[in-house]
Image (cartoon, rainbow, N blue to C red; front, side, top):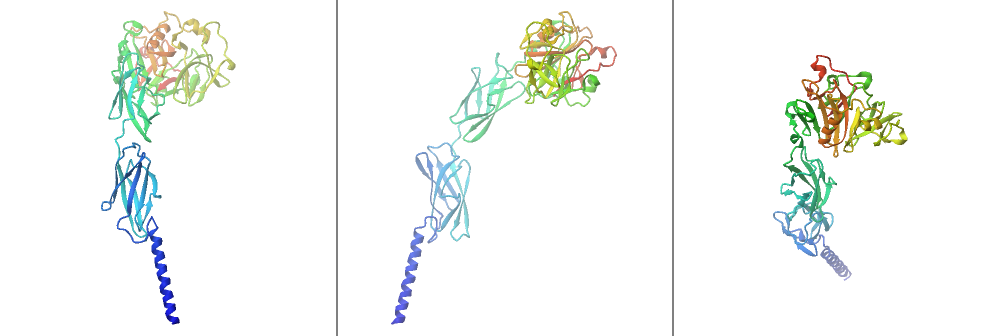
Amino acid sequence: MKRFFSLMTLFLAGGALLMTSCSSDDDDENGGGTTSTTPFASVTAKDGGSTMTATVDDTQKTIKFGEFQNTTDLTSVEVTFKMNKGYILKTPANLTSNVNLMSPVYVTVVLLNGKTEETYTMTADVPEMPDPVLGATVNGVKATVADDKSITIKWEEGMEINHMVFELELAEGAKVVSPEDLAFDLEFGEGKLVVNYLNEDITYTVRATDYKDPLLDMGWTDVTADFGTLPAYIKVYKTEKAAGVDNNVAYVVMMGSQAEMGCVGEGTSAKKTIAELEADGAYNVYLVGIDSSTVQLMVSGGKLVQANTRVTGTLGQNEDGSYQISYAYTIDNKIYTFPFVASGNYANPTADKGKAWAPKTAVAGLHMIIYEGNILTSANAMTNEGAAIYYGDADYYARSAVGITKYDKIFAFCGQQEDGSRGVSIPELAKIMKDFGCEEAIQFEASSSPNMHVNKMETVLNSKVADGDPLKPIQVAIAFR
C-alpha cells in the first residue's frame, strides 16, 4: 500500500511538471513550444498613420512590401516582426526596428535550437524620387533642368559668365550643399551643384551655352592653338591693332580664377633672362617683371624673397587661391597694403597706416594703372607711389601689365615695339585693360625688356632679340599655370 502511494505521487508530480512546461511555451511570443514550419507570423510597417503588411514567401525567402501610400522617405521605416513558435529574430536586433527600405534589408532568423539560420530579403516598392531641383533661373532667365541631372542656362548680355548666380526652386526637404552661394564660373567649363534630398547627396552638372567671347568683338584673335596644350582656363589672344593703331602688335593671356600664380626668380641679386626663368617649365605662362626702375616686392610660398623700395601696385594670390592687387610696401620684413589717396603729396608709408597682408605669392609692378575700375593719372601715381616713370600720353613703349576682374579672371598683357609696332602709352594700356573688365591693373617693364612666353614659345618680338642682342636679365617672372 505504501509502495502504491509513492508511485501515484511520482506520476502526479511528473504530469504537473509536463503541464507547466507546455504552458510556459504557449506564452513565449518569440519562439518555443512546437516549432512552426515558417518563422514569421506577420511583418508589418508603419505607413504614416496606417499599417502596411508585407507578403512573406518562405520558398523564395523574401519579405515584400507594396507601395507605401503615406510615406515617401523610406530611409527610416518602423517595421515590426511577429515570430512563430520555435524561431527567434537575429537581425535586425529588435522585433520592432527602424530600417532603410530604399535598398534590400537582410533579415536573419534562427531556430530555437540555435543550429539553423535562414536569411530573408526584405524589400519595398521604392517610390520614384521626385527631382529635388524643380526649377532654376539666372537674372530671371529660366534654365533647363533635365532628367540627366543637368542644369543649362542660355547666356544673355548682362550675365556675368564668371559669376553666374542661380536661384533654385527646390522640392520640400531638399537643401543646397555646395556651392552655398549658388555662384558658378561657367566660362571655362562646367560647374557642379550638390543638393541633399532624402539623406542623399545628388550632383547636378551646371553649364552655360551661347556665350560670346567679348575679346573677339574687340578685334582680338584667339591664337591659343598656336601654343600647344594649355588648361581649358588659359587662352591666348593677339591683335595687330593695339589701342586702335594699325600694325600695333600685342598679345594677352586670359586665365580663369583656377590659375595658380608663381613668383619665379631671385630678385636684384641674381637677375635672369626669361629663358632662364622658365627653364624648369613648371608654369605655362611667364611674363617678365622689371629690370631696374624699382626694386620689386617678391613673395614665394608665403616667404618674403625681396622687399620693395617704395609703395607700388602689387599682384598677389592668397592662401585660399583668391587674387588681389593692392598698393603694398614692406616694413620690418612684413607686408602692408595701403589705401588709395586721391590727391596730395606722397607720404612715406608707416605700419599704422597700413593693413597687414600675408599672400602666398606676390610680385610688385612699376605702377598701379587701374584702381577700383578707375584709370589712374600720372598725378595719382605721384601721390600714391612717389614716381610716374614714362607716364606721358605720348610715351609709346612696348609694355607689359597684369590685371584682374571683379571675379578673379586674370589678364597678362605684353605689347611689341618692333617691325613698325609702336607700342602703347600708359593711359592707352590702362584703357585696354579696363576694356577687358579689369578692376585693378599694374604695369611691369617697358621699352626693350617686355616679354611673355607661353609654353616656352615667344609671343611678341622683343626688341633685344630683333637687334641681335642678348635678352635683358630681369628680377622676376610672374608665372601662371
